[in-house]
Amino acid sequence: MNGREAILGRIREALTVATPAPGTPSHDGDRAAVQSHLEISDWLPAVDESFDGMSALFRANSAELRTDFFLLNNPEELVLELTALRDAQG
Amino acid sequence: MITFARQFQKEAARITRDLQHRLLIQRALKKYETACDAEKSKFQSWEGARQSAAEIKWDAVNHLDAYLTEFAHKIEARGTKVHWAGAAEQAREIILRIVCEKNARSIIKSKVMTGEEIHLNEALEKAGYDVVESDLGEYIVQLRHEAPYHFVFPAMHLSRGEISDLFRRELGTVPTDSTEELTMIVRRVMRSKYITADIGISGANFAIAETGMISITENEGNARLTCALPKVHIALLGIEKVLPRLEDLALFLPMLATAGAGQSLTCYNSLYGGPRRPGESDGPEEFHVVLLDNKRTHLLADAEQRDALHCIRCGACLNVCPIYKNIGGHAYGTTYQGPIGSVITPHLRGLQDWKHLSGASSLCGACTEVCPVKIDIHHHLLQNRRKTIAEKPVWLEKLGFRLFAFVINRPALYALAKPVARFGQAFHPLIQGTRLDPARTWTQSRELPKIAPQTFKEYWRTRK
Image (cartoon, rainbow over all chains, first blue to last red; front, side, top):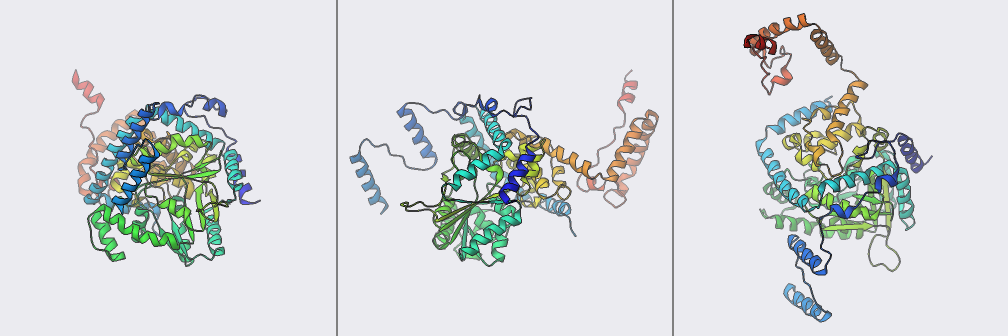
């Protein structure tokens, strides 16, 4: 028996005894039932769905990470900004 | 031979008296606490997130065979070699064989807790390889020939002055009190190490079954360089690291950053799915994943404590633990310190040798309260105590409890025991702390509680 089969065998043997899912009193290990009420986005920090809201949040988070955030309107502005950064940073 | 328990007691007693150390740790943890609370408050529901995280980990651990098979199958399909290591020794052998086959000399590592668990550095160095830790904190403790002090903050027990002195001594740098300068010193050292390293060894925070990828979250960018620059990348991870779906990271990455470091998200979050493919400009030529059991399946077989495998190694339970705050990380003498370490270490390294760890808890439950995946940590400590006694009863303790039961079940005897105890206590100061003192373990550092001058029954009688 190779390492893979040995480990998977031990896992399968261990899992013959079921454990109740968190917050449920039963020992029913049905995956679909456990996951049916998962809504990750309901718990995470709220994000505004508008572009302005998202960019404002991005700007605030960037500031927290001490990163400069530039919101540019077109490729020409990008060229100007990159050139300025290159000149400033050497 | 000094036992692990004796060593723990000795070290814990020594470090508890070091007030400077205590101040340093508590100051660092206070900063973490403030940042962590602020980040948690940004969640729409931190409790809801904990419940979801617990359910996802439950699903992953309780269907581990299926998810591990899926992960291995998918990552192998992209040219990664997956190795299955049943024990620490096997994992070391696998890694040493790869390193030897590649004729490597220099190895760079990013943070690998499983590497600490299997004593990988010692094995590699003994075999003559040059191993360097690229994570700033890990590099500092490596220079000091110490184990990491904490899951997330390996060098949190050191002041800037101590780190500056260490760099002056070991690297010949000019003393500085600036965090930025200290970081730059290490960055300069690391730059050449990344370029010359033949092998990069990393851990993984999560293994995604759905896509066959490992996820690494970090703040320094060192793991990214460790994984991308050397020709060979080896990832060593425990089998419990698997998550079912890629979208699960949307929850786990912010939760790990929040609970672990008081951050919204760590600065670098990477996914690795295989070696460099034709046409790609960077990445390793070879990618190996070593999946480590090392008695995790023993814990899996214990249905009562299986949820200890949900741990995502955020270290939140350490940060709130009154014991950890006083004795620090090194006193435990284990890879995984603090409350969760005290739960899992006896399973991984032997219940009788490490039973003392479950006694090193006030059972206040703070660890359980902060755990982002809702592991019932303090109850698991109690269960470890119960299992220890069930496996190997302590005759003196057993005799003590039998005697107690005998007395308490006989009111006349109990009534007699009270004045005898009061009388005995009057003479206790004469033998306190000496070998004749039956309570000396307690009285070495504490006062023995005084027996009340009146029992409740006596009080009730006089009340009339």
